[in-house]
Image (cartoon, rainbow, N blue to C red; front, side, top):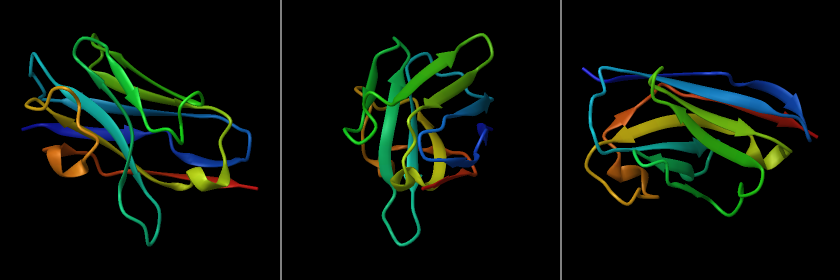
Length: 124
């Protein structure tokens, strides 16, 4: 049973930083994509960033240069370092994983496993 548990969300002012974590339990794929998505109220879930088992990363244009995705394989943990946060980054952030899709998809429908989400609120 695969379980993804996010943490690290919170409220910050514009220009601030947060680091999200996603601990993966029971996940043993040798090839995989792990990704961050976000969803603001009234909006569709959108791709933020992804990383595969080789460490290759991809970012949405809206976060490129501000967010950094990384992973600690020894801890089975995915991270998202978010700098220079903007009010438009406010959303529920979700961790997702799948062992079948390479290169990493930007479509949330392609991911099998999901965390419960962690809220990020950026005030102006």
